[in-house]
Length: 477
Image 1: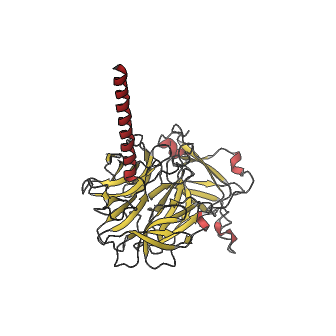
Image 2: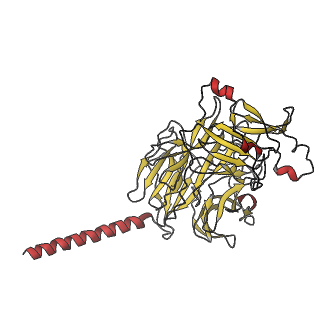
Image 3: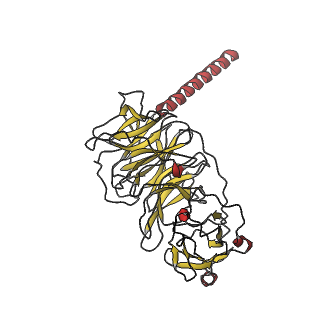
């Protein structure tokens, strides 16, 4: 009798286990291999706004999921509880999705996370400012863009990180540039579209930096007068693909590819032979991309496969005459990028910058040497004032200790304090960060000469100048 009862218990346990396994398998099959899209019903028009305001953030946009293997199956609306939603980003295990959304019409955009197993969502950020463009980081945190003020009159979009419950919020970008559409490369660095907002609006570029905000530098220089429109998507063969137009007011553009190893000099237009416009791109596998495309302005952007090798559009996956496809991602497990160590020490108040020769520039190969070889000083410029003038060593080198997380630009001067080279792009140093450069406005691919700069033999010059530091009671460490 006891044996029979024991057998019954074991049998029931095995049946329950089988049902649990089947249920879990069904849950995994519910979304695994599906395609997530952002859609909008509002007609897209050319914009006269050349700022970095993200063209994907449309009122009443929605996020949907499509099973590409079941053409007759209806779309699954993943954001039905939100007034507007976009910017989907899939976790490395393929089980969650970050997105940006407005719960109600007048709410600021915030970051949310959806669990694909139960289709429940949770709010990650809770801020009176807009928080957009989330991406998962290798250490289990996330990065996103949030509106900040960098002076009394101007705002921008700075990069932040936080835990998935919204705690441990950290700002990691400090220049007056707007950073949007960030993604993480396999080497662990963040690449984002960046546009200078002060003192004037520049063209957009891709900047790259570590998740702690250090080592920010130019990764890809966008076309003059053009427009970068999407995140950079890394393929399995070391390429990055994105959408870029040659007109900043144009809706849509071409699919562009660059090599990871030489992003500044490897631009390739994959769709130059195809008439029409592309709006979104995502890697499907080594040979194919998912793209949104329309043949003419009278049509809606629809979802297609694109063959990288042949540079041809293949089958249409989804088309709806009432909606444009603005973004597309594939739900699948993918490799987690490298987790980079951090050199930031918040107990420190400064960072160090060493330059080898201010008279070494990208223009040095030209015949006009008078404008590049007579600088003897640098001026460090802040947002609204000069932070100090420093004489350089005989070899053109300088060594600075700069208040951390303070945006600055550098211009070179002659012995009479006349400007030789105007201010370059905005820089900042994180606490305890050490950075070096070859020269001023030099080719970003240039490597330094194998010699020790004379300035490295001396203590670094304090920036802002020491008197100002003392007056403001700022402790330099």
